[in-house]
Length: 352
Ligand SMILES: [Mn+2]
Image (cartoon, rainbow, N blue to C red):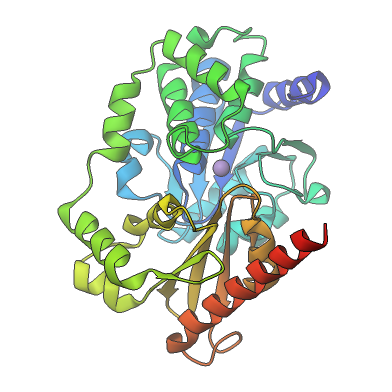
C-alpha cells in the first residue's frame, strides 16, 4: 500500500529530527486527532523525538479520551504558542488533510516553515508541491490506517503491532473507527487486517466504542429527533436536505461538534441517494455531504459548495452574501443545487 522507498524516507526524516510538530486540520475529527496522537506517542516513546501536536481549533470534548495528556496546542486559543511550536520544530508532519489551506489560520505559519514538510493523508489530489514527502493513498479507510501501515514498516516495529505504544494503538483504532462510521463505509481488506492486529495487540475496542458512541447527552438525541421529524426535507430526485440555523443550536443547548453524524442519518431511507446538511456558522454555512455508492458527494461539493473531499463524504461552504443573500436562502440554494445535480446524473446515466 505504501511504497518501501517512501517509508524508508519517512524513517530517514524521523532519524534526523529532534523536535517535530504534528499538525492536522481545522475542527479535528476522530481521524485527525487519532492520527496526531498516535504519531506523537510513537515518536516520543520509540524515537525519543520531542513531538508536539498543533490543531487550528481544538478537538471536541468527546475525543478527550484520546487527546487527554497529549499536550496539544489549539491555535484558536493560543495562536502565538502554536506558531512558536511550528517555527521551533525541525520537522513538520501534516496529517489527514491534502492542502495547507485546510489548516486555516495556521496556513501562513506552515508555509513559512523552513524545514522538511511531510504529508500523510487519504484525500484525493494532495498539493504535492507544498511537501518534501507525500504519503497519500485513497484506498484506505483513514489516515490512521495509512499511518498504521507506515509505522508497521518502521524498523523498530517490524510488523509487530504489539510494539506500538498502547496509546498509539488505541488512537489508531479510534480514528479508523470514526472515519469508517464504525465499519460501515470505506472498509478495505487492509482495514480489517489493521483492526485484527490492533485487537491482538490488546486494544480495548469495547472501551473505544463506549467512549465514542455511548456518552451522548440527552439533548443531543432530542435534537436529532427534531432534525429528522421537521428539519430534514426530501427532494423527488433522492436528496435529503437539512439546514440547521443558529437558533437550533441555541434551542437545544448544543455545541458545534454535537451535530457530527447527523448528516449520515437520512441515508437510512431507501430512496435517498445523497444527504446534505448545512449549518449556520457566523457569516457562512458549513456544508457536509454524504452519498451512497453511484453518487458523488465530492463532485457536488466541488460544483456548488467551494469544497471537496472523498467520493462518498465531502464538505464545503456557502457564503453570505456571495452565494445567498441571507441565511434564509440556504435551504432553497441547497435544494436547487442537489436537485440539479441528481437530474444531471440521471440524464447522464440514461445516455449511457
Ligand atoms: Mn480522515
